Length: 525
Image (cartoon, rainbow, N blue to C red):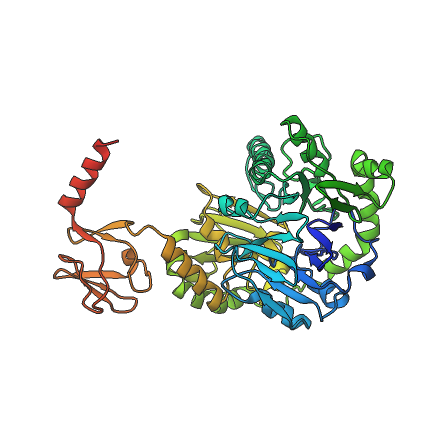
C-alpha cells in the first residue's frame, strides 16, 4: 500500500485493488481564514484526478473542497458515503456531478473487489456538521485507520478491525475557543494552555488505544495568512496557542515515550510493505526541516503569494444588500417555534452585535428583535460581535450551517455568561426545518426523562412524550389534568395516563413521594 499526503487531512491511498482519494483540500476556507499548512499549492493534481473511490469524512470546508472536487476529480469516481442520518453529503456531491455511490453502514465492512473498507460514523449534533467519520482500509497486506477529525467513542469495536499498520489522526486545534472570547488575557492564556495540552493528550490516547505500528499527525493545523488572524499561528514559543504543528506533536509523543510518530508534508509518500514503513518527502530533508524551524519566514512568503486572493474574497462580501433584522426574523422565528429542545437548552438570549445594529435571538420567548436603545446591560447569555458583511453573506446565500463558515472563520468575538452551552452553537448548525427536526429528535431521545418540574402538587417530567415540547412553558394544569398547549395532548397527573393516546404515559409523582425518594437516594451516597 502507498499513501501520498495531500496536506491537512488529504490522502491518496493506492492499493493493488484500487485507489481512494480522501478529503482533498486546496482552496482557502472560511472567508480566506484557513489555508493548508504546509502549502500544497505545488502538487501535481493530474495524478489524483481519476481515483477509483472518493471518501470525504464530513462536510467541513477544510475536508469538503467543493470547487476543487468539481474542477479536478473525475465524475466517474465511486463515492464512499458515511452512514449519516441526513443525505446532505450525497446531495452536495450530486450537485457537483458525481452519481455513483456506495452507501456504507456504520462499522460494516464493504468488500470492493478485494479492497475492504469500513467507515465509522458519528451522528450527534456536536459531531462535525451533523456528522463525522473515520475510514479503515485493508488490502489484505496493510491495514490503516484514517481517523482525521472524528472522535469515535466505540474504541472496542474499532479494535475488532485491527491490528493496524498506520493511524492518521488530528492532534491540533480546529475551533475558535478560547482565542475569540472577550475575557481577561491571563484567563484566556490559561484556558488555551489547558486546551493545547488536552487536545494533544487526547490524540496520544487514541494512538495508544488503537495501537498502530506507525502514527501520522494530520488534519491540521491550518495556517492563518490574513492580517486580522495572523496572530493565531503557532510559532513554537506560546504554550497557550491551540494550533501546534506536526513537529510539536511528534516531540510530545517522544516525551511521552512514543517513538512511532512519523512526519509527512504535502507530497510525502508513505509505503507499507511486510509491516515496514518508509516515508519519502518530495523535497530534501533540510528543506522539510526549514518549514518548521523558520515557520515565520515560511508563512510570510506564503502570505505574500496569497494576499491578492485574500483581498479578493474579502472584497466580494455583500454590504448593505439586505435588511438583516427583517431577514433574520423571517428566517429564524419559524424555526424557534419548532425548536422545543433547543430553546429549552439555550434558555436565554443571544445578542448579535453587528457594529451599527444589534439583534437579539430570544430563545425564551422565541422572538428575533432589535433591543430598545444601545444599553450594553441588555440581558444576554451569549454575545457575538461580527462584521455585518459576514451575516449578510449567510443570509444572501441562505447558509443553513453557520458553524461551517462564519464561526469556523474565527472572524468574530464572543462573550458568554456562565458555562459553555452546546445548544447555542448547535442551533446555528440547524437553520432549516429538516436540520432542526433531526436535532430536536436527537436531543429528545437522548435527554433524561426525569428532568422534573413542579406542577399542581406533582413532580412531572419536563418534556412532553409527544413531540418533546417543554411543559414548563407549554403545560397547563387544571383539575388534575395536564394539557400540553403545543399540540393539545392531555395527561392525568394522578396516574400518568395519557388521555390522548393509549400507548403513552408521563412520569408524574406526588411531591411528598418524590421528596421521599430523593431523600432516600441521597442518604445512600
